[in-house]
Image (cartoon, rainbow, N blue to C red):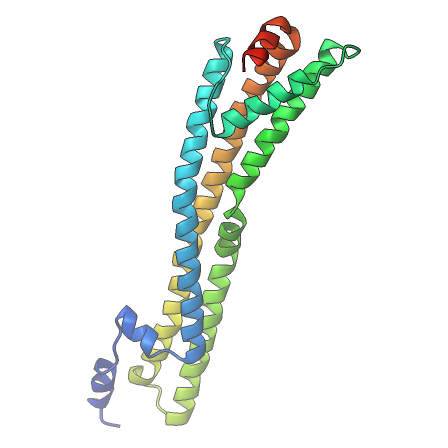
Length: 230
């Protein structure tokens, strides 16, 4: 074999990202497309969650401050509004035979139920991030294994173990793994961060709910006038 043929053949192969994709085996190409689509969906979810969870954090802080100061949150929309609306509805549905502790528990239960519904809405999309974070590396690895198998087939057919024969298939195979990691790493980091942020949001609201529930269970006349005014 002429030693000059190997560099020439290697140089003729396009090792750019687009070139690696276009020259890949159809199966490896399908794996790459699947991973790119998963990445697009993941980043769409991440951007949407960043905005919505930031808003929920602000609402939780405002809710806690206002309740701690003795006020009644009066937001027209958002989590705070729905939690307060549930509290007022539960407060109006009073039973003269129930104790103050029972009334407080019923009001707090109604507020926690409203909070849970909103938190479930905020959690939409997080399972996809968890799945992408765990599955993407293995999907990329499948593309890598398939590409390496093709490289070995090329070696067997050409009976040539030079870099010119091996390098293109190996590069395409490793590119699939790289895409899998690019999908998985942001998805895992985002899932962990959003899960922690939602737990903090829930904790802030629950603290305010306990304070508000105790006040509503204790003070009947004031809130009766407020309910009538509404």
